[in-house]
Amino acid sequence: MSNSSLVSYTLLSPNHSGKRTHSIDRITPHCVVGQLSAASICGCFTSPDREASCNYGIGKDGQIALCVDEGNRSWCSSSNANDQRAVTIECASDKEHPYAMTDAVYQSLIKLCVDICRRNGKNKLLWFGDKDKTLAYEPKAGEMVLTVHRWFANKACPGDWLYSRLGDLAAKVTAQLSSGASTPSTDGTLYRVQAGAFKNKENADRQLEKIKAAGFDTYMVQAGGYYKIQVGAYSVKANAENMLAKVKAAGFDAFITTEQGQAVSSTPAKKSIDEIAREVIRGDWGNGRDRKNRLTAAGYDYDAVQARVNQLL
Image (cartoon, rainbow, N blue to C red; front, side):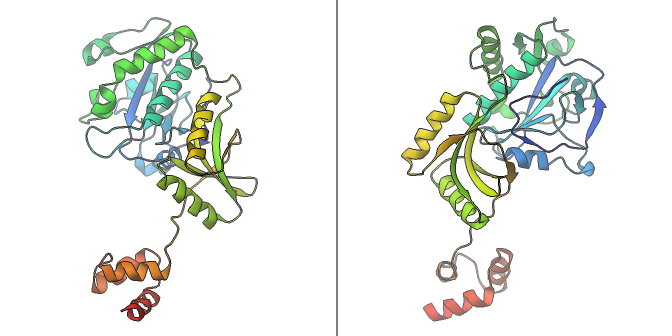
């Protein structure tokens, strides 16, 4: 049983039950409750103490990560019976009702469901919207069925934003399975928009913050000795070209690459002592010991900041 070629990051969780005891005929999308990256979603399930996992995670920028091999049963739906036959997918979402997801997440979810269905010999994805009907239904040979976590536990998962779109998800996936539209490249190639490569991580962090400030969901990878700032991961090159045009229009030099790197967590660039001192004067950092604790926790030299405050006053 293969994994999806759409995966661009892998961090396998120890939390699973080994090989499935039932063939795959369900897909269960979840909301992770946090606008996390694909790497961060995998990071949620690295500790055995967590006793939870998923097969795939989709980050807020649409990147797809592998957390548990598709051939293994993840611990995701509060139901052994469901997890034995379902591919489980954690999707980045808002932290509050209705737990909305970015368009990049939703589009990647569609593509991933199409890919899962194709590799498992399915030509139709079904959503009944009714727990009893769904769980009593035995899918035919070419059918895949959507289930949800809220049916097995007292949870809102996957949140009303996605729950209300599951009919649309099933229809779009089935349409692509029927027409062959938007089929990912057979070799799994993903096209990424790259907007900088730096030997120095601090320079990469600054570039990443600039691109985020311009409104793009971006991430950092390390490859070939460089820290590279990339936007998106598209199986259809035309989609990458559209994003490239947007990034360039925002004033950034960029190009399309198919190079895949190791995901790297960014470190927000620190402000200058002068900037922090002026924020302190405005009252942004509180007063007294609270101010000192907050500045120290943020990685600033309290004495140096206070000295500059005294100079400015």
